Amino acid sequence: MTESSMWVEKYRPMKLADIVNQKDVIGSLKALLKNTSEMPHLMFSGSAGVGKTTTALCIAREILGEAWREYTLELNASDERGINMVRERVKKFARFSGLDTNIPFKLVILDEADEMTSDAQTALRRIIEDTASHCRFIMIANNISKIIEPLQSRCAVFKFTRISEEEIIDYLEEICKKEKVKYTKDGLKTLYSYSEGDMRHAINMLQAASSLGTVSEENVKSSAGLSKTSDVGEVLKLALAGKLTDARNKMIELIKVYGMSESDFLKYLNEECYKIKTDNLSEILESIAKYDYRLIIGANPEIQLSALLAELGKIGK
Image (cartoon, rainbow, N blue to C red; front, side, top):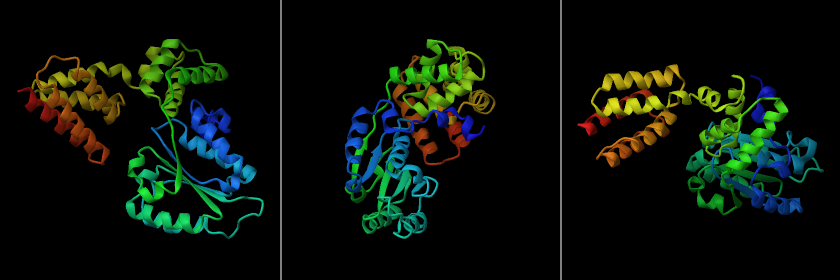
């Protein structure tokens, strides 16, 4: 699938006025852009898929015009976390040479800046100070608490809120009409429920569901691997009953055959805990949280989930 055929890129807003939901943030940014030369460095925080990166790109277009690609450096800091990225790529781009007299400044967009190491953030602080006359930085973070205080203090911080159900469904409905896709209201509500306010995820799922025909609740669940969520409850019961091999085989089937992600498996497992009668709910939830953290920090998913099932078996005895 090419970028041009991806709906998430095709329907990405090009102007600040087209950003969904973030009215307070956009209003403040428009006020800042009235005097471009005095625009401070910016920091955008908020959960995934709420418009942070899109807003940064819209600012680049509005300030730099047709030359925005030439004078904008966009980096995903989670891919290049270390100090070498800061010293080599950012420092080289941010230097003064090559700046057109009609361009107010160069722009560096650091996506997922909260994934940068502390050393890299410290090095970036010095570069921001040294290049302030001809370069502006927009740092984007899901978790602003991971950004060192000296960097936060050098930026105007904007917090993006989660997009409401009504606004996401309205936007998905608009895409369906433009793409001539049949849909049901229940289908779009299911998309919102699964996306949890993440517009990017919702649009990607919409495109996947549309390939099955009508965007109905059934097709959304099928395309998202949700049709097998009820089987997660069976995995939980098997594990608590001490039937580790059966529980593990069922879990592997859900992940490898039906395409359920490991994080989704844990999310649905957490939900299923509240549907069963047990005196060990707090222990089960603590175990799920522990293994969820292990997956986040990069441990082997299959090994960790198997260990979780074994721990559930001990709890169930």
